[in-house]
Length: 131
Image (cartoon, rainbow, N blue to C red; front, side):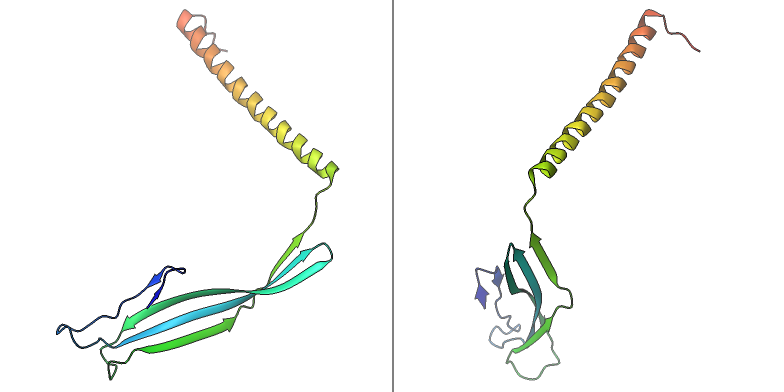
């Protein structure tokens, strides 16, 4: 069994004699997640499929035929995506907030470095005063 696009590759295992196929059971789990996309006046309703699988070898099974089991369910969680355009005023406010934050952090770092260098310099020349 091979699905290169999904990255799934599986080879049937054999018993110690090399001729008899080990009994195996493969479970495929699939979940459909409903999604709603809104862009302007257009609304799209789609389902995203999430899948995985596991294979087990059970010596209690009778016969060499592999068993395939499919478990399918709808997710109770709905994904709702709404795309809105940001206005020019909101964009400018965001830019000012970013610049103000960077300026504040730079000021704090500058103050810490200045006090540290001043402390080290004063202690090296012996003019450090304790208050």
